[in-house]
Amino acid sequence: MAYLSEKELKDLGFKYLGSNVKVSDKASIYNCNIISIGDNSRIDDFCVISGKVNIGENVHLAPFTLLAGGEKGIIMDDFSGCAYHVQIFTQSDDYSGRTLTNPTIPASFKKETKKEIRIGRHVIIGTSSIVFPGVEIADGCSVGAMSLVNKSTEEWGIYVGNPARRVKERKKDLLKLEEKYKESVR
Image (cartoon, rainbow, N blue to C red; front, side):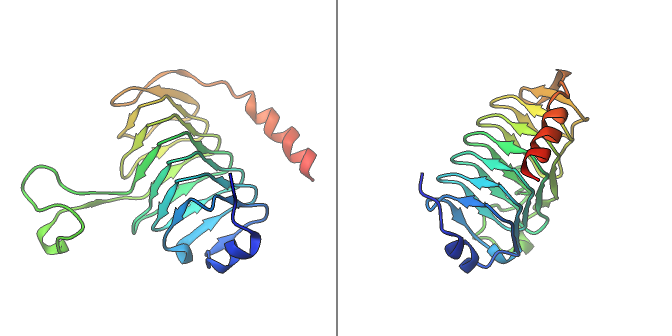
């Protein structure tokens, strides 16, 4: 995988760009002036990032991840990540048939839902999962592959399904590993 150079990253004009950030030269990033990326984060091939997005430290976006931050924004806290094909949307059209849909239609003919999304610390979202507007995935949660997260979660749970539901507790051993990691990089 080829990554953009430090100069190429700086030239994109991010709102904030941490150190040791890796972004694939095959990723598509729009609205860089409202996107922040923290230290040691990595964005892989074929990811699409647009709108207001705040990526914390040590965040990983696997290939084909879509972060559609729109106006309201997506916050991804430290040590979070998305597996292949994860899609996160802060905006959605009304599909009931009462309004027109799609981006070619003026807002006066549409009814869009627009809500911020927060992905907490140590959250991992499994492949091909989808996160809807207004959801907060609480710290320490893991979301199983192909899950639809349409409601906020509670901390340290494992969620799976369509719609996603809590199936068990997630272990917190990784918090000790986080401390060891931080000590090793000081």
